[in-house]
Image 1 (cartoon, rainbow, N blue to C red):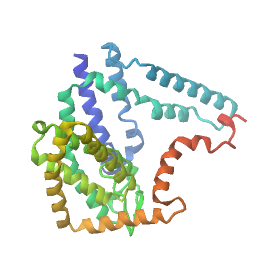
Image 2: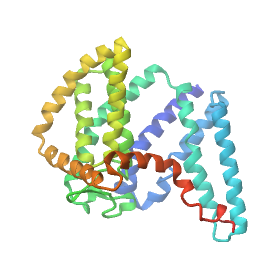
Image 3: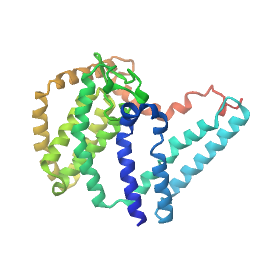
Image 4: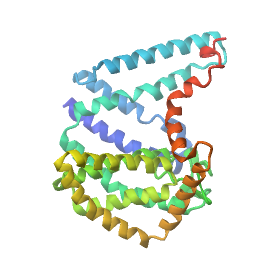
Length: 316
């Protein structure tokens, strides 16, 4: 009974994750700030049911994570005591951002069945093309258009991609949404080639078309790199696993149909031109194309070490 409740809450969380941005920028932008934490009560209720049902993740990793969280809260409180400009709400929100949703990752395999994963895959494959079409309209629209509003209805809030185009966020508030979503869809596309009986061929063709179209109009190098990693991993798997080799054979039919269909869409040529200009500009930079991408990854881990001149915990 509790497991079914957690599954229901999972689907609520899933749809809120996909549609939260649409609420914050189009439907009720005046409630953008409270909607930012709309998923928090859902995940907390899942944790409560998981605790009652004795399925809450109990790994050493989770315990260390919470210990680190408690330590940072303690340090934040000490900083507030020493510095009147600090704010407890900021400390709590930081804890929420960095830790609250993390155990959810480890709860999923304890609750969802293989059938649930197939259902998630079908939903993701089904939304791939509609999301890509929405991104296409955003890509073709002016940066100040209603469809390109940011959180709270902000005008011209999206990042530029170059040549007068923006990086379309889809239903999300920012392009980081599609950057995370479409590699996940690509992973289920690869799974669909291995599990042919679970997915319809038409759904596979449309989802493949959606993935390719999203890459073309995204204006995001990160999205293209992430998608490439997923498909390269699938091809490498085919080298060592016979079943994956069979999946590769099934791979070419929908990909070929999707690729042949793309040139009939007038936006493709412009999308390729925009994303190419981004790669060219990055290559002309001091770090070069490959170096720039590698440094972006490294900086995500080294940023805390770059501000060594700042007072420790702002307590000086």
